[in-house]
Figure 1 (cartoon, rainbow, N blue to C red):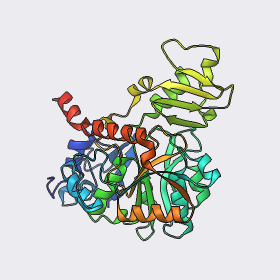
Figure 2: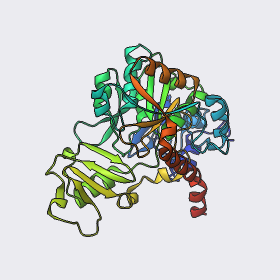
Figure 3: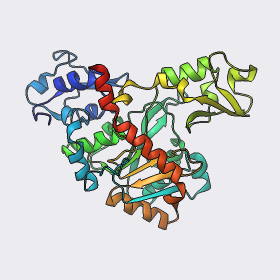
Length: 380
């Protein structure tokens, strides 16, 4: 276990400086002294008297930032799982504990069309807003000045949720938006597994800034990619696709890039040397994942959690077209899922009819659980 006296000095030395940091920004949100900021997907110490790797406030007894870090407390994940979902997962549960597992999608055609894989998350949170269960949702939006570049936002209307829908596959530190959310408000947080774990760790530590989060949606995630590598390197430079033309990105065993027909970039002139990317049909470009893998974020290589095992509900496309595999893990997750279905906001199907998707989920979850040990062995 991490000592109760751990603070920024330990967090910096063991997590940030080693490259293990997820970039979730929970420590930045939690910092009561305002000396931590967020730059280049990393927390940065700004107090000149402390130095980058030190903290005079921590030396005096402040431990808040360390208490918010899930990576620093990686050895207590089973205790956290028991507190959140009632028990630790069994060996026959590679994707974690869940009460209900279904395939789901938005009932509303407009929300379905706006979503990534059926619009389930957008529909569920829209239903929660309309029923007064939350005041807003912390989600990944898009920087209006930079096409496809994500940024954390707080959506307070169903329209704002639809505007923020879909995946960008580059990292958005969604918990960072909690800096501007009063602890007295009620918000849902949509995030990657590392972000959900950070919120759960901070809540278990009793940190005030995270009290507002009353519901979590975890997005199943193998890895995310750097903006410079995926967007500017693969899409713009190699394929010649203008980022402003991209309507949707999706990963279904390969990267699928949807653009207006006739805007497929350099592939319009034929094959690109050194790339196996191709035009599948007008307006749809397929890129092998091996051409994107070199641009995966380093922190993702340390992540053991594919299926967001500490979320109220976890959601992932898993190769499905128009549907999302949903795992309700907590009593609140079960209640919201079934109430939204009862009210007609979402459609549910028995997950037994999607055996291939469940097999993919379990395979990816089992493989990802081995990542930290593999990375540690490579460094040894």
